[in-house]
Length: 593
Image 1 (cartoon, rainbow, N blue to C red):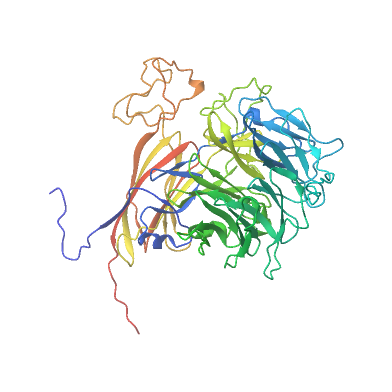
Image 2 (image 1 turned 45 degrees about the horizontal axis):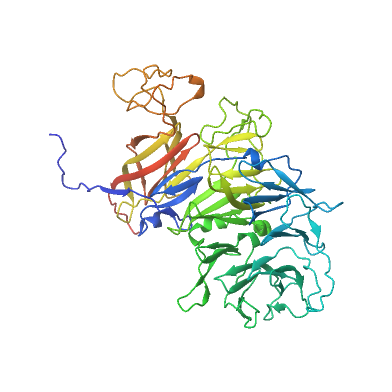
């Protein structure tokens, strides 16, 4: 008899399958995710979810043309030259760098004797750039000519036709351009604006507005919104300025009926017509209703990832910076977590599916030495393989990143997100490891599934689990979690698939020299190519070819729910599917006495 016949008292088995995954929810208990949220993950580290499948995120590296020798970067911004191309401006201690893909780095001088001692803000005003240096120093202006230096914004001589415009650009931490004017906060609750197309002439007696209804908070950020609106973010309230166009004759100010404001100026970003920003309780959004009114969504979009929001060091949360990765439809927010005083992690939100992909961290694994690089311009970096060679283990790192700002510009012909740090500029989305500060860090990918309740309440007995994976040079650990503290069982520990071994019984090992021109022959455990093999290319060697495999275990555990945690500490992985099967535990009777 092939199958055992069911007998009296047997309990029918139940099975749960996640054929696709949608996002992360770490606010609720993993067992609760099984109720109406199939495919939801309880945790995700260094992951991108593409077509319903979590996979190892791409790595990062410092492009040569974006990394001359910096002294101490104080600020950054994008300058789209109307007469040329787009440049990344990086304000160094004693100069400003002009950086672009494939271009030799160029510098813009500062006024004689001027150095940048603290953070600055670079704002493009059509064909020129204004540098704000805080409330104690006059702004600087650059006319867009790379052969000309920044100059001080000095008071303009009185104009007989416009006697009111005699004030220069006021001292401030930042400003924004809207309706062909420069808008600048001049006090805790006042905003001033410049003349049309003349960003250094202000009338501080008439061309100002006040945003205050009896609050004691201060202006944190300004943001253009929906063409004719300016949003004034304060730390405990939000104001909307209507009629921002033309001569500003119809200018009105109103406060939104909300009890929260903006925590970090650089966290504000325009996402498909909505404004996302970091507040005290998480990431919120402003949206426009069908009646063209502005509404603040009362529930934060970060509600599902409250577990990560609670890890933010709120003392330094004002440093948080965001960027919109338009190529991949992502809102990326860098924040300080776990007591850090700098932005050391990135929260990643999918603006299309409206789910969180996960958290990106850097330098979580032992680092490797990067070979000494030749002179800038003579060194070629392969974004897939990187420089050939081997690097020995170099111990555990102390700190990896200090994200001061995030910007997007072109690299290798496509839009790329850059991290701007005090000593380097790092491009995201390239390679298979993070190259940071002269070291390479393998990516640690971690995915924890929801808790599988097998379709019923009560205590279950797990029979088996199956995990479908696609991997490339990966080191995989699989752990089984059940409800209760410390309920973790390791099913698979740091498994590395052999790139020379076939899964077909009786077939010999693959010849790494590829003299048989069989690199792509099917049913090999792994298809990583190594430079040290010195193998012959013959008809070609396809890179990044993932091998599919299923890891099945006859697991024995008991609990209300069962979850799997899959960790990849080397190489890359794609999680295809997860399946759990079990039965209800046999009920027992207990005396009530």
